Image (cartoon, rainbow, N blue to C red):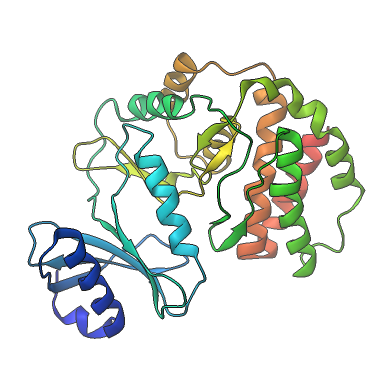
Length: 305
């Protein structure tokens, strides 16, 4: 941890962070050191040391980002209140048009995975996915990466998946020139979604992480799983599983433990997994460009076959 790095961080950012920390502990806090934290691809991040015994984690953007960090703080708090998994405590976040925009969390250091790391993650995720009362969606809009994510509410799951997930990303891909139009294949998918997803309609809505790839879960200091960077909402629980399978990085023991706690209905592997993976693929096209188009096209054809 170096004090010198502090000189490169925005002064207003440090002032806001010290104020948030002082309010959190009810006495004056001074930031005395910082080091960059790698791993994020959208925002800048750092670990902060203070005159308190513990360290803190801050992410920021060099311009106001509307309510992106408020939305992330909301998702983290929802997960923290709903699971035994470690989720960083939100200390504070910027409001309004602060520049830079920021989010301040407790710092949960990375450790080595415990022997039962994957099993613990599978069981706890299945418990998190206990069905809840209410419609699909969330009480506010939020973001996946830096892209807006609308959240209904919608009573019908297949309708939600189209109008709140696939359709907005398709329109964005067309607007950005990645797709010429929302063509007949996508129209065919829309017409078939009620039959593809209708079989799980009665399972109800679950709180989902919403962006559960391997970079958003890691072993903490006790060897247990830590969840970060959610795009949380109430949806069908399998969307989290489908996301874990899209880019890999999860052990077989994770899936086995999940299925023992929350068995999957028939048709997940053959149908619904592919339908759910179209959304993060569209997001990757819109975030990172044309290199993901071939994967998206192949996934759509596979979904319809």
